[in-house]
Length: 265
Image 1 (cartoon, rainbow, N blue to C red):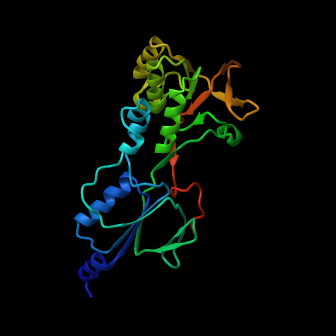
Image 2 (image 1 turned 45 degrees about the horizontal axis):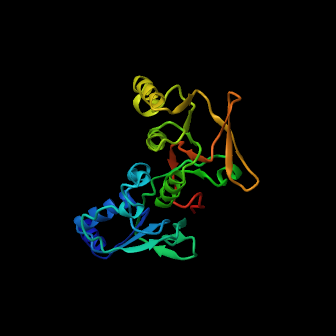
Image 3 (image 1 turned 90 degrees about the horizontal axis):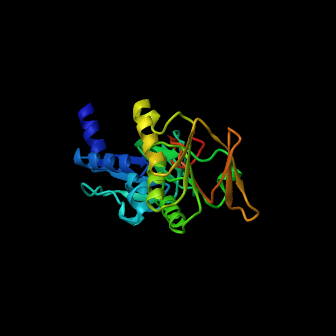
């Protein structure tokens, strides 16, 4: 059998598993179908619900312009796939060519793509990250929770990190006349993405709109009350600020499998 025959046989009867049911995974599946793949296609994702757009979560969803459920990604075509959602992949067994799921199932494949992207960096101290009122913004559920917290009218919001997400959330808070402190280790906001000159302009704009912008400092501790709710943050310069909502916007890190830190065999 020639290599062309082998390829045609795979396109007709092969099994492809895509781990990561978000933008990259969806567009890959669509491209496979566009290129004539008619075999078995399986999409694995650790979140419930089909792929959705994430950038609006820190913008339109938080402002209420778009409901979290209204961020579903548009489909370019039907991909005729089996969707395994809400059950993360936990391992890869190369001896049997199976993706292992957290519920104990194995999904056989001939070819497999990992397209799990990134995850929001959490606050590094687990007990402090678990305090009520501490948020990251990565999923629709995250955005909905933060939207409710902002709508409740907190006395002050602390945002740790003045990148794009942190700056967007600070702007939303000020639009609602909510006191907001932004802590950034760099000398200005957005320096990593846009450079020092734009960072200085962004710093001036934030301060002009009432943001308590603190650059060159880091948050060293989040302090909670007896009920387990965040109440205060301590900084590396010895200062502290009271806040009942804290948003951790420290960027993102690669997600090996979309399910934390699995044991890939």
